[in-house]
Length: 330
Ligand code: SF4
Ligand code: SF4
Image 1 (cartoon, rainbow, N blue to C red):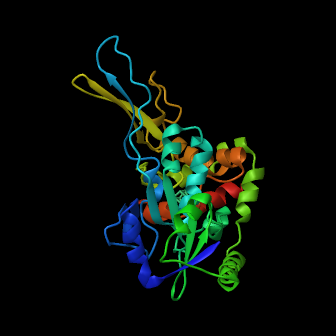
Image 2 (image 1 turned 60 degrees about the vertical axis):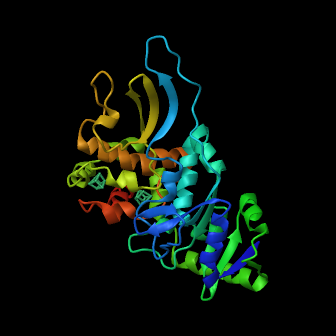
Image 3 (image 1 turned 90 degrees about the vertical axis):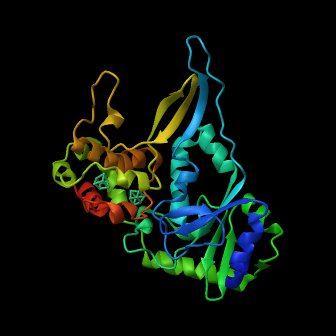
């Protein structure tokens, strides 16, 4: 089902739904915040909507820090029903990839259940974007409840889930549209897909021999400029490494889950002191082997939606495509 929202009605509508729901929107080039009249829709934000599902600090257990005390049952931080507007389709697709691994994770799932995700198609792909090459069709809106396509006079909205249908059922600002509008959505999708085909590299990587890739000579050279700073992993909408730590103040303890990065030496260090990925090149290789071989072999898709954030923000100028090229032409 499709609806139309005139451009000038968008802010009013966001204000209206903010009266009943918690509403988050992109507020600046950096990322999302509660809707208070400010909107940044020009480009994708530096931080994706991933942080709403894998937050920067999440309490998973509480305990009394004294001998013999038992931990509390699993602790859920209260999550209010919320709407996130302006999510880019590649970032929503990223959540579906994370869900393949976190499908059984009650914390992640609770946040997914309580969230309505409203997507917004980019007017033009960004300079570093290559989502289509990774097999992402932004018009399919995977992971979203509704998808907004900006047009000359306003937004054409495609409903994608029962949650989306429920939300838009009573929204007076939107008008139902007929076949002509639906066809214009399909036309835009067709034009996009014709111009932006999937990369043949993925098929080659599926066929590639895992051991040969692992032992390839190119890793040393490609990893040389890498600072192991972890920026690429923290900004990536598909990276989900985490650490679990106990934080104790006085007698009150909390077990928390925090985002981590496989690029860090500590991440893979065992309690014994042994580290299977002690060298920077081993960590670099692991990041890309995970994204473009292990995950691809396991789930049939790469762990990358081609958002281009890693290319844009890497201080060492490492370009993901150079890595993919090397991996796929071995
Ligand atoms: S952002 Fe660049 S330098 Fe930093 S860890 Fe990632 S690849 Fe290495
Ligand atoms: S690896 Fe880079 S391009 Fe791919 S999803 Fe992560 S940040 Fe985006």
